[in-house]
Image (cartoon, rainbow, N blue to C red; front, side):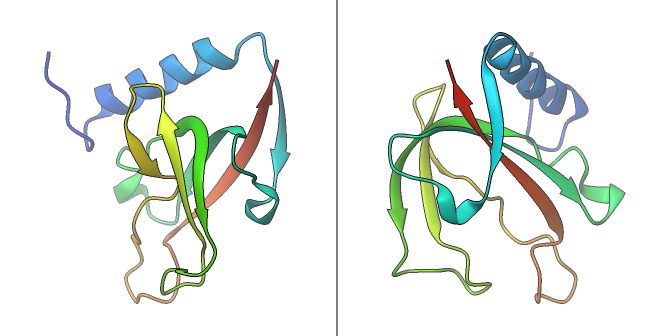
Length: 114
């Protein structure tokens, strides 16, 4: 079956996969400024609008790059993870805000420990 990133099935598939990975692991919430290269992190999102609830899927992976020099327009650092599928991706989704002065969602970042 083909899923796209705005599909409830894709959202649930991602979350189920992450839950299976972290089920026996110790996780603790950390702040974005405390992330270091090599950290294995999990990030979950809470949209400001229900319209985007299934497009803001959670992410998990190992931090491979932190670029504090090239912060985005909202002053967030560019943090790249290698996800469990072997792809590089930014830990944050793009902005989903109507007026551009926020991300349009909140997020929680967790450090995964064995």
